Amino acid sequence: MAVPITFAAGQWLNASDLNDLVSMLGGETGASNPAVTSGNDTTTSASYVSLAGTGSVTSFSFTKVWASTRVELSIAAGWSPTTSSAGVTFGMRIDSTDYDCVKDVKGTGVVGTPSGFAVVTGLAAGTYTVQARWKRHTGTGTLNRDTNHWLAILAKEIN
Image 1: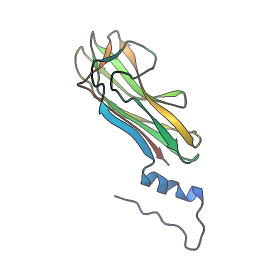
Image 2: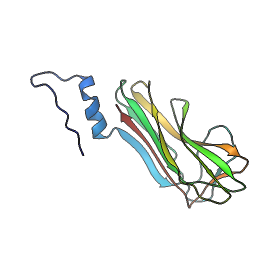
Image 3: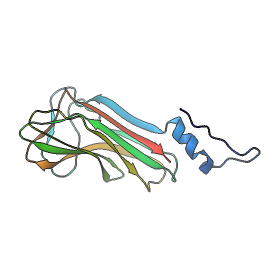
Image 4: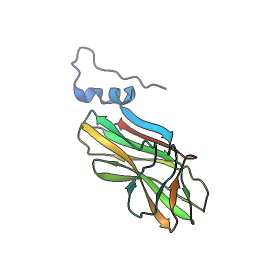
């Protein structure tokens, strides 16, 4: 349901008056596609690394219009451990900082499809590269993304 926005009659509008309007109009960019179109993307890293893989779209350019707003980073990602029980943390990088979005733990060969988000404050208006990231936060197994998994990533300017 849309929330109406009202402005005082006879008054000039300024940039801060339009923050709600910009958020309602979209102000979002992202990608939703197969995790990879062939092969696999794997990691055993305990530190964040960028998602990769053949045909995988894991980053995009995002323009933040207002300095006073925040950015919501969202991710939904399929994955499975290939060698033993392991835990994955999916995050998003913007402006050289990684933000945890969601954690998941699965046993060997069990597919996980976690989704989550992070809210980023303090970013100036401007254009940023947003990159999907992952790391193994527990266990000893190899984390895997393949053609049976999906990846959806989004950045949205919010109040």
